[in-house]
Length: 77
Image (tube, rainbow, N blue to C red):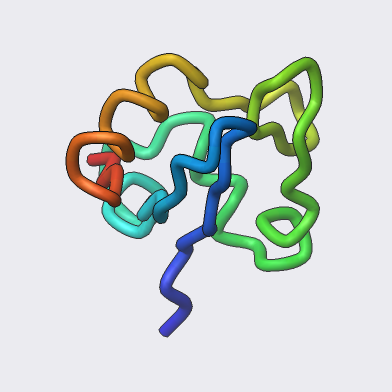
């Protein structure tokens, strides 16, 4: 099984992981269901300071930063 995790490091050195596995594989995945395809998931990149995928999918950088700074991991459900 794919773990659907990415490692993040912010410009100030704060680093950690983002775990999207529950979100992507869950019944309420919505637009994120397209990331089940590893060819799409692996196209992750940073655009305008946001983690982004094709199809205009992105993650809120401010929420990500807060969770990683406090917990070293952000688990999306």
